[in-house]
Length: 340
Image (cartoon, rainbow, N blue to C red; front, side, top):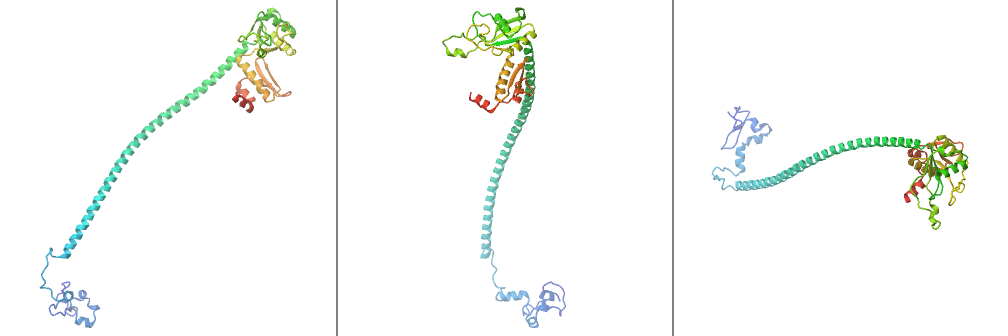
């Protein structure tokens, strides 16, 4: 006997038979799940097909078969499927548009990145060019510093040589200037007044230096502020010049009237002849020495010295750099120069 469910051979005692009069099919214990049925249910047990027929209202073999066109359920499923396809189509269309926008944005971004890369390449080339210019300028700055140092050294050497050439000259300041003056006679009288034995043969040459000043009058009050040009005398021997300067320091109160010079009486000074650069340096040194309370500032053999007070050592000033280091510009002096 075969099982109507699994179509395997079964023994009659181990299976169960449908109680329906029209069926009488036999099912094995596994297909019918006999072990879970009670004795009453085994007596009235029906197979699944018979149970399904009884739930639908009996035999439905005479019911006409409906075609697919007459099946409402099938039509509803078709409409639902069409709606879903329409929604899917609309979603695909929307996604396509979004993808198109994304593609356009990607193209714009790619173009922008390409332009940015070009700009970056241009900037990098400019940076390279700028770095080369900076290196070139740094090298020029070093060359310029070396040249400035060389120029400063050469200028100092030239100034030192020029000062050496003035070693036999004396500058006399405070002698009134007149049209028919005899400068050599004035120098000889000044030497005699200073206690120096000086002859005409000791003088190499004598002259006034500097731009010519306007003649002094008695009607203009500003004439009292003008000073005559200094007299420069060059002696043949340096020892004579040194004696002349040394003797003149002991007669500091000498005036132009003492030297038998006509005109208004003026105080006379005997100085070493300095170069233009040393003269400016000496003037600035005296000004700063006064500002810093230095008691002494003098020049000896073309070299400038300062001393703070008696007992202190002398400090040599040979350049403006040394002057700035020893006697820096005070705040008040800097403020006054800025206001000028």
